[in-house]
Amino acid sequence: MGLFDSFRAMLGISAESDATTKADPEDLFGMSTAYLTMEADLRFDSADEAALCFSSVDSTDFADTVDAVEDILTAGSEETGTEFSRHTDGHGYNWVVLADDDPEDLVTSVHFAADEFIERGYGSRLLAALFGFERDGDRAYWIYSFRRGAYYPFAPQGTSTRNQSLEFKLESVLDGELEIEGDESYWYPLWPSTPNGHPWD
Amino acid sequence: MNWKPDWGLRGRMALTMFLLFALYIVFAGLLAWYFDGLFIMAGFMGVFLFAQFFFSDKIALYSMGASVVDEDDGPQARKLHAMVGRLSQQADLPKPKVAIADTRVPNAFATGRSQKSSAVCVTTGLMETLDDDELEGVIAHELAHVKNRDVMVMTIASFLSSIAFLIVRWGWLFGGDDNRQNAPVIVAIIASLVVWIISYLLIRALSRYREYAADRGAAVITGRPSALASALLKISGRMDNVPKRDMRDTSEMNAFFIIPIKSDFIGRLFSTHPSTENRVERLRDMEREMETA
Image (cartoon, rainbow over all chains, first blue to last red; front, side, top):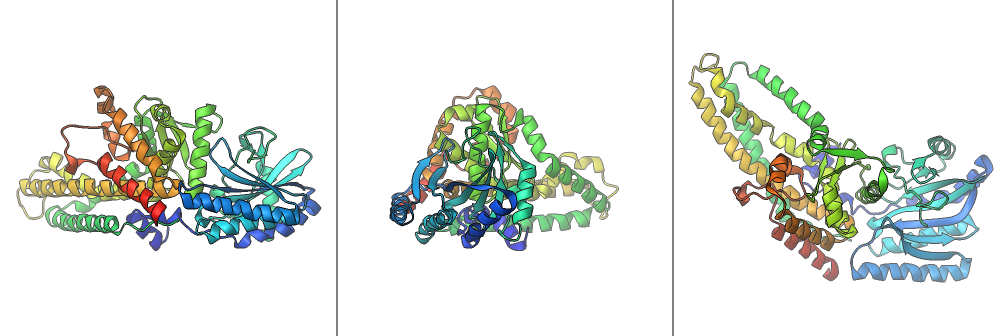
């Protein structure tokens, strides 16, 4: 804990200021090439779906922002054919789910949507972007944390266990290509509610 | 979304800490002047502080009869884990352990000396009383305590105060022989008493300010100040109807509770938490700022 952190903790403002840290979308684009590596080296195919996860703000301005994001994605879908849907799951997470069989388009759409949140001053509400992968029924995700500006792997088995050896493998192979979160205590799980579902279903 | 910083609150908090610090310096000087075996005592107290600090989470959970739960320990545990996970993600905090205490008293608290060893505990009564948004507000408040390192701050802040209290209580055992100045032991006891009373009031003030700070943190984390406000109103309404025996069992834990158990004898000056009306009023200000700023 640095001096500045201690000072903020003393004044009791760590919670307030860290919850409003700006989003760091810089390393999001690493996913475009990661898709290729995942397929070539690990035989993991794209699940053809990606999702953006955000926490809401109880204000009219935020509701307008979400509408604007939907408009942008609607416009985008005409161009790239990326389909999208928006919903809130049983745990209270808000999702924008994107479907496209071209991974490149998924990355671009996630980026567009995230950018709109950031432009309108709600970057701190972006929690994560998820990119889905499949291999013989195994599911794996790369999760990008906008708070920390880094990726981490997530391989759920059923609804509450992680396949840690697979996560370790993903981390080792993609290290260097993706900016990976070094502190594993920040590898937040996002459990699917059914054994074969996606976290956003 | 950014709210205007509450400089008044920060200023008051800094001033309280400064006064406490100044008081402690004077007190430490006085002890050094008075006692011979001061270093032995300081070492002893250091160990005591360390132990308290190190085991505080276990002690707190144990004294509340709370048990740490896993993801798959039933639907309540699952729901809490999901909620705590999401809110810690928003707060940029490693996910703390989750504990449930089986009691009808609706309450919640956070423990742990560091962010990595912390635990958030809620009672079954709380989960029954509140809806999901309100529960989220309360959990975010506890996470804000963890984030602000309140256990550490309050432990350090009350360290010398507890030494002063020990001297007041047991000082007479030292007698008059083993002090440096040959002053009667009553001098040390009276000085300690004064230090203890003043530091007690300052610590209580500090605790109230940190509650306000955690409320602000919760509002910012959830993006929904009104949810915590309605949770506070609901809990404080329920608290008045809680049977007396529960109060006595749990009153030691007050400093970590979301809402302290009411006591008619203790005035506002002595309370660890601000009044619910004041807290709700401030949350309302934040709600207003959100729509109009």
